[in-house]
Image 1: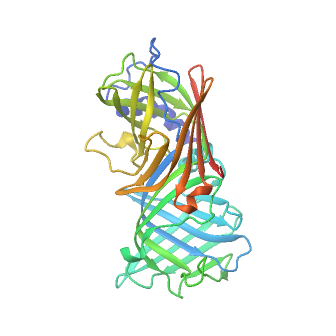
Image 2 (image 1 turned 135 degrees about the vertical axis):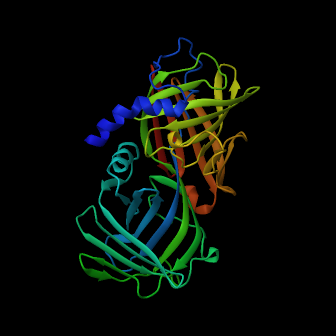
Image 3 (image 1 turned 30 degrees about the horizontal axis):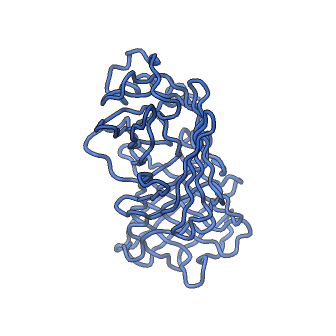
Length: 385
């Protein structure tokens, strides 16, 4: 595949952009080890800001419960689109219009099916009311055609946090915020292979669909990542960094940004189209670094300078022993609960057990990192305690 070859060719150039040094400098592994598991944060977290989001609820389809799409506009490029079919058994199937993104998503995240599909999308306003058209071929080869009409201009009063219900319960812990939304009208129509299906909310009184302008989603995901250590620092000082290569040939770089006493702030940047920039804080305790927080900003780190400070995104706070909290942008403590960390030989395991809100209690997060020589195996699982 041409895109894969181009990625390999550009890896060293991207490394130079990531760390701000010439790309031709050699990558060497440090002779001094700074600790067995302290260099990799074990949580698989994503965060995205979408310009448009549309969802409809199917009242009478035997297999599908919802059809939705998240659209991100890009300057000088086609929009990035993810269309999701949620099944009545809770499983979800992702459809991406970006082949490389679909490849990496399928190669890292588990518990869901992922396919590449061309996706047609149109959005316009008629007297302030949203009108949208979405069309794509489903993973089963069906012609999915959605025409959406909003009943009113998008409003913050109709937005807010979204309960994921039972969707993707064994594969994700999602935090979703709708900044301004509008309910659908009766003119909204979904056809599958030219057959119209009735729309109706998951509970009585809920409209058959919604449109959102400015949709934020941060997610803990089930998946597997293999990181091969290419370079490590000889000392814990600002400007030093670790470099890893994953199983899909993406580079991941953790650069030390600040050191204040025993507290370190690191910025992770990556060539991955799936796993984006992170801000990590840790505290040095003896000969290891203990994780204190992880924030995924949603930015492709190699596309932006380290300053100004990145937007908040989704942030996991582990600074209180035995507890955790998750924030989304300016909304603090959206999900809270208990946190524990255990070590077994060369494996470190974090367990997050949500307590609030109630819908999150069935989505325990287990994040394990195992070191095998210079390779770190990261496994994340989501499910009942």
